[in-house]
Image 1 (cartoon, rainbow, N blue to C red):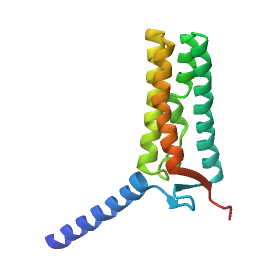
Image 2 (image 1 turned 180 degrees about the vertical axis):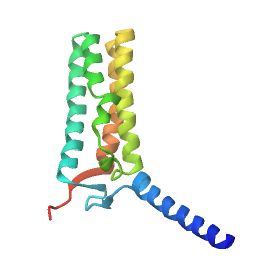
Image 3 (image 1 turned 30 degrees about the horizontal axis):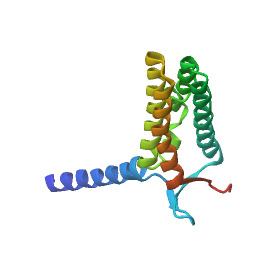
Length: 155
């Protein structure tokens, strides 16, 4: 009886491990024709991810503009919009489809925008903000080099 219990426990752990790998680490991706990982998302999920990316780009433009105007308050405001608070809008059903490395890039990008906002508020140095933005945008480049977002065809 005890051997059966251990076998069942081991089987359950293997299933949980496989599910954790699928939903937390690997996500739902395919190799695309251009060598990047294709994130296969429902149309609404794809729209959400692309909207977030456009918000990153909009914030970057506003930060650069504010830096040219020596406006630390505007830098902080633009960065804060896409900080960690913005990632709360991402549903769990989408998060499970995203591979771990993509999630890491996204979380790090939101965190870096928050740090940029805090430093702009505290130090008010546009040159520092631009340096931080330059580092932050390496995440954008890495993401776009490694991933593309495709919609799952409607059934």
